[in-house]
Amino acid sequence: MSPAADVVCDGVLGNSGEQGPALVRFGEQNARGIGVVVDRFGSLWDRAGKGVLNRYAADGRLLGSYRIRTNENGNDQIALVGDTLVLLLGGRLHTLAVTAPAGSEATALKVEAKTLSFAAYKGRVALSQGDKIGWFDPATNAIEALVEMKDVDALEVGADGTVYARSKNNLHRVTGGGTTSATSGWPKAAPGERPQFLDGWWYGHAWHGTIRRADQNLDPNPGVVLGGASGSFIGHLDQNTELSNCRGMAKLWDGAFALSGIGGILQVASWDGATKQFTIVRRVGAVPSCRGLGLDRDGRVFHHTGVWQWHDGPDVPMKFQINPPEGLGQVVMLDDERMVVATNLWGKPAFIRGDLTIEAKTDRIEKDCALPKDTVGAALYKGDGGWTLLTVTPDGKANAFALDPEGRYRADRAAVSLSTAQPVKEWTSLAMMGDTLLAGADGQVINFARDGEGWKEAKRWNSWGDSAEQKFGVRIHISGDGTTLVVADRERHRVLGFAPEGGVPLWSFGAVDKAGTDLATMEHPETVAIRNARVVVYDAGNQRLLKLRLTNAR
Image (tube, rainbow, N blue to C red; front, side, top):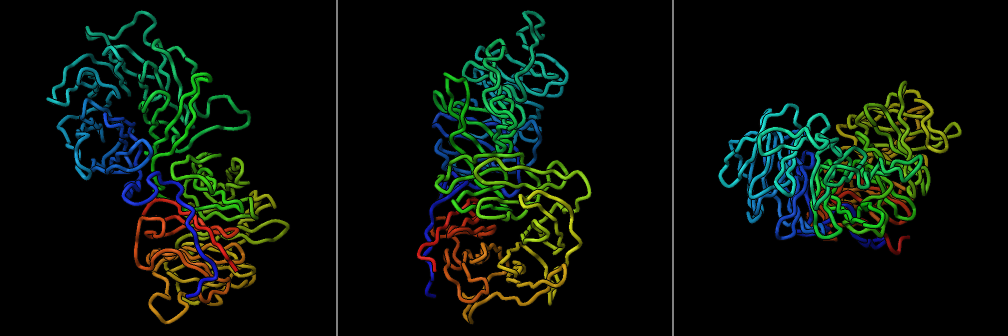
């Protein structure tokens, strides 16, 4: 093939390991973060999806993955005692040496617990079993009873070995005599969920990425140090939605802290002593899933809740983050700058819209909207002084919605049919190329022409020659910008660009039938977007986004 354009990889977004053995990977199923610890080697540990514990370098590279129990609940937590990790997973304690080789499995102990402290004191951590609070020694598995207390949902240990128990949003100080102190103003209001005593300060957490700091007497100092309740903005919710409700913290070095996100993605924050505020400066993790990508003319990339810029590196946090939607579909662009995507938010249909240079708007539709929860493909075409947004589910159910010129939802349109010449098992994506609707389905590109209010198949194709390399695999994802159709050929590990009518590819990227982890190869590329000679593709097997730039395009 004589390409009409050369393809340059401009790097990686969303995977702090970038390429090769350092690539970060999460388990196949989501799981909450469990807090984070920093061992004596300076490496960070946190859960990375169900059944996976990851160890990272402070710069975001993966150092090793370990097997842990898949059972989980909201009290799961990690602590460090010397060189031993103590893990509370699904109500049972487990241990793992920080010197264990990658691939090792944490040892399940015959010790059940409800809560666990973050901090340790003289080789022990605090735990609760039912209403009983005590010390646990991971070297001997011995438990020393301390006190009984109802409704305990969190424990922590102070620098002097004092045990603190959170019950009904108050922190109680547990004395050596086995009772809780009712003097000197105790119990006191906890600073938030999962309270933690770290580096001489109390920290607590709330939704919208909010972190509060208090002094040793639990007096706010200054109070909110990160996130949505900071009051720094009016009419705007400043938040990191990957952090969301922080699972725990660890100090890396003076002025730098690791924060465990709700889904196991770590954020590294720097501390400004003058303003008494945290700023998130690094993202440690991967892109475990991606169903929609927006791309504007300047290379800004929308993914799930926020935006990356084209020049961002693999460990850069997203900007302009919004509340996380449920079941994000394919993102479409109104023009070179503005996007719209159909989704669901808090159980209701919703449409996210806006310019990628600012925080997107989410319009939640309370009634009379038939948007399904599992849309995958979307396409946009003009009509009635605005836009029609067409969506499709994996089984081919199509819906159409009237949008105003700004992309705001106006109403459901009449039912739309996608009439095919033969049955389709799985639809993945849509694209508009002029007046032609294209669909990626069953490893084929299907061209549709208008048929009244619906669409009727005009042709379908999956090859451009007779050789084995000139045919798509069994699953493809497509995107178009009006002049170029881009196809992510999942099973054959490549991305190809075509003229709107198909034919011989204009360019290709990746090694056909050869998966890889470097910057020239992929493993199972899926969701894809193209605009202004740029392509961003979800490299699903490597859990990263690749930035591709077309040069010498004709």
